[in-house]
Image 1: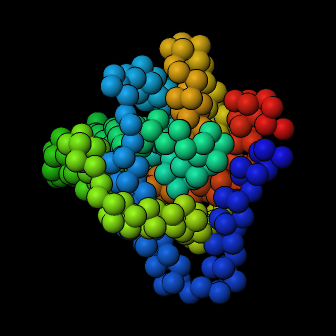
Image 2 (image 1 turned 180 degrees about the horizontal axis):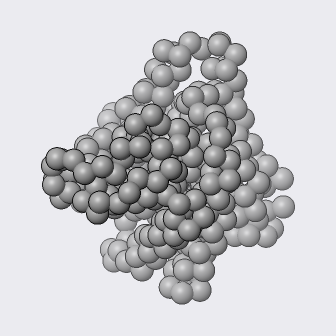
Length: 336
């Protein structure tokens, strides 16, 4: 019953958003408005307030950060090896394929599910991860994707699947330098509402002023709508993604994300670094989330691997109901 109580509300609200859009109870414009409200206002209020009022440890758990992103890179690179060996992808497609295995839906699904399973005390470990989650993964992915033309790789057939222009994905062209493009992407990530609100909240926390009562009450009111609003918005957004083909590579990507990633995270946090139990559990829960929608956004940017990314998002979201239940049980066998 514990697992059902923790996961059912999130799954039901997401399904309700999906049904509302699918049955045209909400128009496409209205569905997009829900997503935009959540992304630009509700979630940033939750993250800013959480970071501004959190009690961060005096000594940062560097083993926690190194362990988490070390495992992200292991899965990312493993996905690239599998993508090349099994499906013949070129470097640009591999930058997206590897990202799908290592990039979790850490905010919209990770926060509500982890809080439901581990409680409010898990918020600080999650904020530490989410603060640099997009920055590190997208900077690495961008460097790989932009490096592809300079490597003069021949475009593979797999790069062209699902996009009319991916045949020229690896053609040498005159573009800004790789560091400049990575810098641009990092700037975009830092200034987006998710990362920006977290960093602003952490800075405010560091200054030590404390939130005035009326401001805190206002943020708390908005933050209270963030989880249901964002999960509902995720449901409406999923109607845009379909299982359109490339089932095998999408399934491999999904299994990397749902099974390999949390398993390696557990081994790293518990066996290798012996991280504090709550922090280790939070890391495993974040790692167990399905493929993040931003992977598809990234694939659209480079017009490459779009079909695989879209299919993996749908498959991993569906399969995650089972796999997340398993990881909840694994972390707490009494959960049943």
